[in-house]
Amino acid sequence: MTSNTLKIAVVTVTIATASMAAAQADWDSDGDGTYSFQELLAAIPTLSAETFAAVDTDADGAVNDAEMAAAVDAGLIVVDG
Ligand SMILES: [Ca+2]
Ligand SMILES: [Ca+2]
Image 1 (cartoon, rainbow, N blue to C red):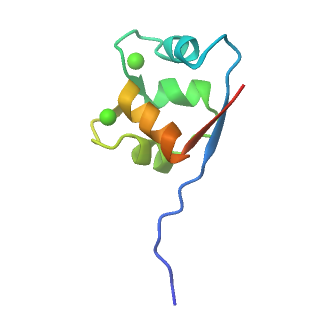
Image 2 (spheres, protein in one colour):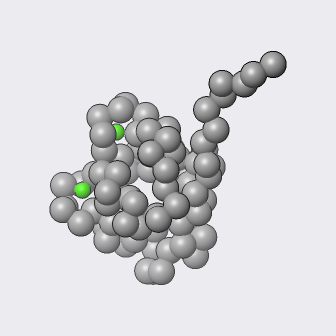
């Protein structure tokens, strides 16, 4: 049997700043309140397009704070630090 199941890589984020909130503020380099794929890739070099798509649950091309929190809760993104 061939599996077509999409394999989503779990990414680990090492937080160098004091808190997740502070780190996320740093990630939003254009200050629009959401994280584009390029902004998250700068923070999480192992991020794949597939994982970004899984985190961006409303598929608007940007990850907001709620989507980020849900991804952390779901274990798609593991915060280490
Ligand atoms: Ca942004
Ligand atoms: Ca989104």
